[in-house]
Image (cartoon, rainbow over all chains, first blue to last red; front, side, top):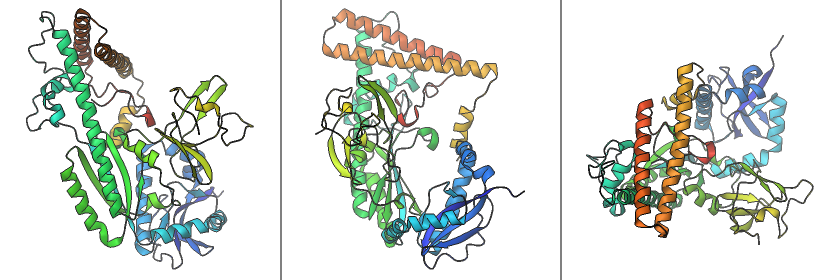
Length: 385
Length: 99
């Protein structure tokens, strides 16, 4: 009995497709081969549905070890194909039932692929991540200098108030027998610690904005991604910038020099440059500028979050968006900012993202009336125009 | 990079009694830490508003100081680091700010 197989698609290239793919091994360990349709060539592999079927994938994608191995194999094939000819990479886990399905997909989305290939050309993607540079956690701070003029006065106080240095309390704050003012002094210390923390964060975000602005000028295109959780990266410092830049071939040296110059100029952030990558972030159709989304991302929080709430008129749904048009979900929003057109639909932007103006009730028109229910948000300040 | 494996290991469900107790303790202490930080911030806000007398400020400060000491003791007693006392809310980030 033949086991069910699917077709895992790696990338799509235009005519004169990548030859010499035969020796590559894909995610399933099988050989990689081309599928031609509609003037495009898809680089695919046959995989068993027991491991790559829908339910199996849902299970396996939660397993980080499996995900790591699969992502590496996926990337290896795409990078190899990218060396031979310009390709549009497909996202991880694009599995089709058979070659006919792949051909149909190529025929349907041929226009998108060709447009993406024209746009990408021979450019490569480079990723820049910025982390908030923390002063040393130890109370004595042997090698570390105080974070800046704002924290100079609160430096020792901040260090002593940090939980990591909980043991290194200054002798003045004796527990029970303190004189008048130990309580007030403690509150002072806590306040200065909190404000120093906030100031450092604000300065780091400002630096990240400047870094992004300058690097965008050097790159042909740029995309912002949600910052990654520390558990994923293994880095304790919060990530405040996660951007991808599309660079022309000869400009990578200039770009690297610019990154190191910016790192020198902004000591509050630590920059990390990775590349060159196949253009994963730029495979989708070009999106309009999303200044609210970018600003929100640089605000340090993830660019999307789901939640649901109940309003007086019933359930109000908030949705999530990754900012890519193909997902076509609205994003979470709390307060109003402004309304603009994107993908032919009216969208709202606000401090936490942007979302299309849909009302919550089924059967109602998806486009807003000036008195949409969700406009009466919890913060009480919003009204769509 | 073993970070993702550590993450997986740390979050793998382990059903033996010791680790269950440890997990429960860290959850409880996380909630207590959250409340403590909230109370601290609220106290600072009240102090900034200026509606409290000096004696009240003093009392609040001393109480919060004692609370912080107690939290540190509890943490050390159970062998937890401050980083352990945190919950990951997924896309919303961590529960307690990285401090």
